[in-house]
Image (cartoon, rainbow, N blue to C red):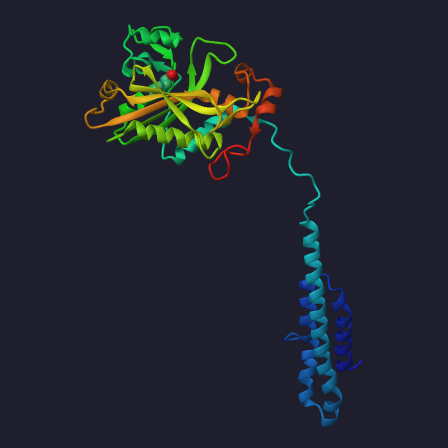
Length: 362
Ligand code: PHE
């Protein structure tokens, strides 16, 4: 066999192998063997120069056809290989969208946690920071610095849980209200002060509407020229947002707390004419909601704030009570019994965090 025939035979073999090349590398190898720098057809083409005109006329078109055939066969196979690779990838990365989603989280958010989140979201929107204090509180902060000295009769109003007196004579109590957070805040911060303090509180009391452990939220604003008008506006905004209604009507009643002067209790106009239902903003009933007042000048000065320059208001209310009203829960005792059926019934979806723009409750 002549050199030319041998090379042509090799090229023909390559043309047969190309369509079944297993991958890009094998394909590239075949291409190089045919039309690479030292490929069979490249060598054939280089032989044209030393051929006679007749021979050149005969072989020239064939050799050129070899180049064209190899090139097109390679590109065809290349396309197929790319498609096969893509199909394999699609198959391996396939997601079965018919699979059921992950099950819903099974726990629920307790109504008290829900309401605490709602309260803090609303006050945050009004520019209040969250402040906290301990459940086991100094007697001094729970009472004395709130203008309730040791033998003051107001101490009896509070049915206090006392903690055994310490060796150094200091007395702790389970805080009977969140008001000691007022003291803690004023002792460490200068006005302007705008805080809300939600948390657990304790009193020796237990029936359908009282639990020995319950929750309050406390508000405190101290600045120059603060008045009762500011207090009323804040409470109105709060109750509108909380009960998710366009308007509310508040009624002020004179009251007495040793740490505020004057002291005011607030009632909210509501309609309870339909059994088991309550509507706010209309009706002829009044619901007692919060204690409040202007911070007593003596409390300000005991906490290191000059009462001649600054004034402030404070308010406090029950969180559990708000939860019962808003979500129609008749009895406070099951709140703290951890009955799973109750939690499932009154609980909130774990992933719905209350926000003012996203909706407080759904
Ligand atoms: N601490 C009071 C209570 O528990 C409520 C209150 C808070 C009153 C702040 C006035 C100012 O009843």
